[in-house]
Length: 201
Figure 1 (cartoon, rainbow, N blue to C red):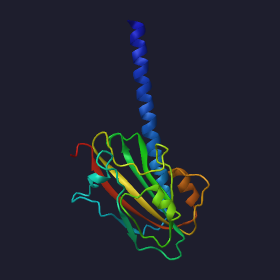
Figure 2: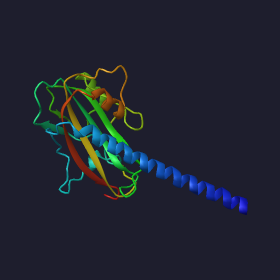
Figure 3: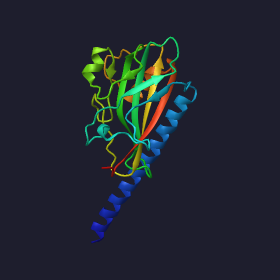
Figure 4: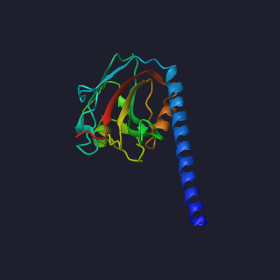
C-alpha cells in the first residue's frame, strides 16, 4: 500500500508542479506581449457586428454552433499602410480563475491595405484569392477556431495591426512568429475584447 500511495502522491505532485509551471509561463507570455504593445500606437478602432448586448460573441461564431469567424471592420487607419495582420486569442484557458495557457484561435496576415473589413465566415481560400494568408492556430491548423470554453466566461481578444510592409512568409506563421516578423513595422494597432460563456445555450 505504501508503494501505491507513493506513486499516487508522486503523480499528484507532478500534476501540481506542471500546472504551476504552465500558469507562470502563461503569465510571462502575457507580460511579454504587453511589453511588445506598450510602445505601439493604439489608434485603430476594431469592431464586429456579431456582438450580443453583454459584449458576448454571437453563438454562430462558437465551436458547437456554426464556428463562423465574425465579421470585423476597422477604422482610424494610419497613412502609408502596406498590409494588415490579425490575431485572436483566448487568455483564459482552461478557466479565467486559473489560466494555464493562451490559446490562439485565428491568425491572418498580408491583408491588403485597401481592406478595412473581413466578412463573416471567412475561409482560407477566400483569403488566398485576395493575397492574404492564414497563419497557424494553436492546433497547428490554418483556420478560425470558434470559442469553446470548458468552463466560465472567457475573454477573446482580437488585435488588428497596420504594417508598413508585407510579411510574405514562405510558410504559415504561428502567432509568436508573426509578432516577431512584425517588429519595427507596426504603424498602429487596435484591439477588440469580447466574451463567450461555457454554459450558454
